[in-house]
Length: 338
Image (cartoon, rainbow, N blue to C red; front, side):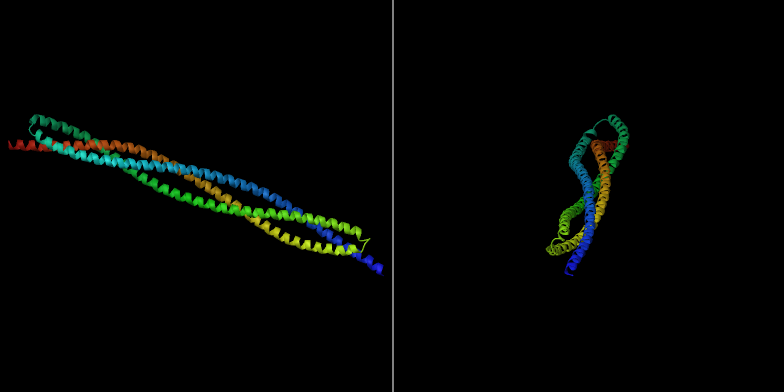
């Protein structure tokens, strides 16, 4: 009876060991499948991270080049302002010279009044012919003045565009900083995933050790009853490892879900980087337009210099015409009196 009980107990334990081996085999298969998926996922993540770094490096290089171009435009604009101040000072000096010339003309007026009427009429005829010529010049100068005004309006537009582009640049830099923070969080998640993969490898090793112990236990059950006690301890350890495996499985599923979320966020980040690249191209086109406007400003500055010299000449002609007109009126009054 006792011997029958002893033989029945190992058979039950053997059945339990077989069931445990089947469960262990399924567990090992799940671990191998999960580890393969984890090994494939980091490779794709590394490729995406590398692509993201290349886009970010290219974007920063373009932003740096754009900053240099904006600084060059600001420097040219500052030089244009300095030249404008110099032109204003020269204009004031010319006005003072015009006043001086008018005073000299008043002084010469007294000396001319003593000249002969024939010479005065010849001068008057010459002044009338010169007046027609200078009227045409005045019309051309008025057209050039309109062009100068349009140039000033373009200059103000350049300033407004420059401020707007600076604001857009700050917004893009803020977006880049935000994406860098998201990328750092993503790398942190990736590190945790690697740690979990290492833990799974360790669990796989421990299960292999446990399986070898179970095999040894099966061979020793027929010879010794003490093996049954060790088997109970081993079975308890197996149940403990099973619970740990279940916990690890839950954590693995959580990390897999987080990994999928991070991949989706990474794809969204790439889309936003593409949009930022498109905005950068638009900014590059606007900078080219600003450079063309700057070249136009330089040409208009040269035309402004010529215009100022012609305006000085007009002032001189106006003073001469005033003198001639007064002399003509004086001569006419003399003729009427005589």
